[in-house]
Length: 77
Image 1: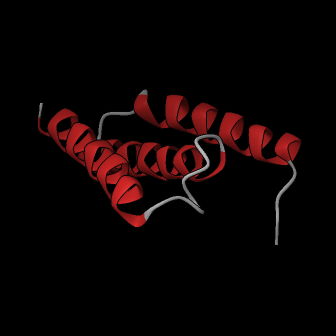
Image 2: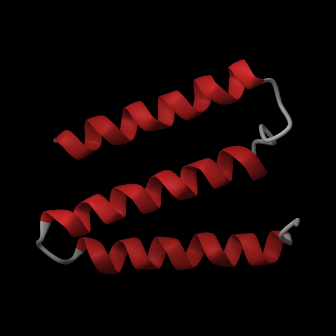
């Protein structure tokens, strides 16, 4: 099923607002939820806007690995 660009954009916006709302709280598990939301948004952007859903596997794995590395480092800080 293909999502329309407008729906996709609104879903990203909703996830961003949810992440901002959750980041205002103090518990560590909420920060983990924000990092997971960011990872989800990143993969959506990689697949949809960068067009890597149908791209070469090595390129998709490299970009996804970079995203995971950056978010892991940020989660540890």
